[in-house]
Amino acid sequence: SEVFCYALQGFLSLNAEGMVKQDSLLSIIDYSLPSSVERLFIIDLKNRKLLCKSLVAHGRNSGEELSTCFSNNPQSHKSSLGFYITGDAYLGAHGYSLQINGIDTGYNDRARARSIVIHGASYVSCEYITRYGRLGRSFGCPALPPGRNKEIIDLIKEGSVLFGYYPDMDYLHHSVIISNNSRKVNHLPEFL
Image (spheres, rainbow, N blue to C red):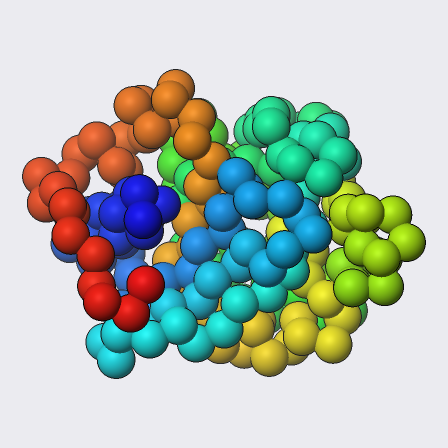
């Protein structure tokens, strides 16, 4: 898929710069999919397999069931696009959470200042979807189902790549991480 090609291009670029500690993992949130389907994908690049999929929420001002607008601005309550490197896990206001460092200049590099983290949330559940037709929404954090946040955080913490994707031409044409990469990826691994 086009999503994976962009994700892998960015991954290769960041890995070449020595920014990736966990170089066998690549996580993708496909914000072009509705919140009522699993749209977080964690891929084991070395063994060429999908390790897990999960529901994930978007920011309340990014849209209802579909996320359509994104922002890097504080107080926007929107999700951000682009590449992140995962940081440390910690216990915070939302329980077991994960710091993520936005490294896509102009698109998500204010993530830390905005307190954008990965955490579990009760509004990320099949029950919520059944009742409201979509997930609940966060202040911009990629929130996970409460029963799965620990497993997912422990898998991707401490130096793996996370990519927030949407077919936004401004982003896809201007992200330094994607456009800087001479290694254009045009073919897909068989497992996707």
